[in-house]
Image (cartoon, rainbow, N blue to C red):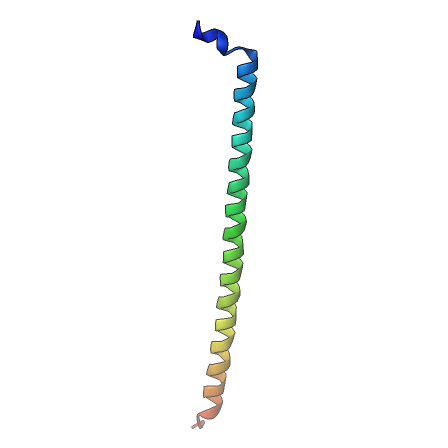
Length: 68
């Protein structure tokens, strides 16, 4: 009785809904990955700038100390 409602039209609608949900999930996952990559790039540049700053400070301190 209730199986007649799940005919070809219902099956196509269910498959279409699943494909749309899968595409939305994939788009969300790609957005998350690109956000994570952006954060990693920003953090690597911050670490690079801090490292260069430390090297400059060490160089200035070494130049100020009298060599014995």
